[in-house]
Structure formats: C-alpha cells, structure tokens
Length: 159
Image (tube, rainbow, N blue to C red; front, side):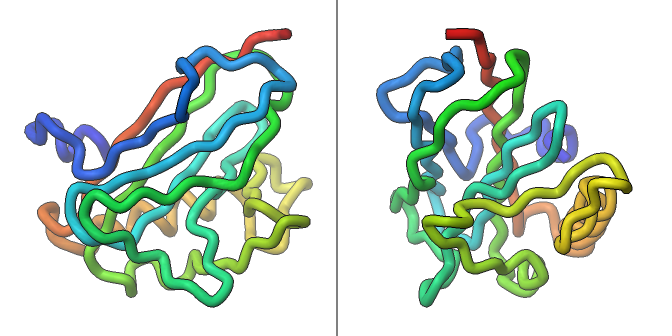
C-alpha cells in the first residue's frame, strides 16, 4: 500500500514510540502513538512473525477519529519475544465506513486484537491473511487522496 503513495513525501499520519528508539528490549514497557496532520479515522497495526495485532484505536464509548495534530497512544505494552524485526503500520482514512468492520472494544484485560497467520490458530476475528485481504480491498475501493499509510520498522532485541 505504501508504494501507491510513493509520491507523498510527508506521511499524513505519524507513528512514534515516545522516549524510545526503534530498537526495543524484550521486557521493556512502551506506548505507541499516532498523530495525523488532518482529521481522520485510523488504525495502528503491529506486524511480526507470529501475527498481526491491532493496537489502536481504543474505542469503548469513543470513536476512532483524531483531529489534525491530535495524538492517541496505545496502552502500555510489554515488549515480548521473539527477537527480530517488526513493523508498525498506521492507516489514516477519511471515510469511517472503510474501517467499520474493524471496530473492536478494547479493555485493560484485552488491550489488542490478534490475527494469526496459521489457519489452525484462527481467532474469532479470523486469520491474518483474511484480515489483510479484506483491509486491502476496502482501502483500494476509495480514492488515493482519501487515505494514507505510514510505517515504522522496529527491532526487538533480547534484554
């Protein structure tokens, strides 16, 4: 998806791990934050070797709309094994209908949604390939100027 926006020099949504570098130690506690430069609906995903995790938005009784320059952060997350490379992806979308099927209510006991790669490990939310296919086609159904994507590569290291 980022290749479709290769001509966009500045991402329309920014990802940050406050007071941390992109090299994180297992066991370290972090928050991941997103800030769009325009009002939009958004998702924050973490992709690693095991699964795809949706870290934001926390909905509850809120919507997933951020105003321009407004920041929202995940709950505190403990960096977990395995060591290796991971990818944080933020999607910013103007039309709330595009993301409506990905609305989940997170709680302190259930702070994220997980989509596993293996069909045998299918969660109630489906598997990672089904999620990616659905999200990809939903995004491609809207004009390019109505969405943007940003990513942050992180490295997980043993403590």
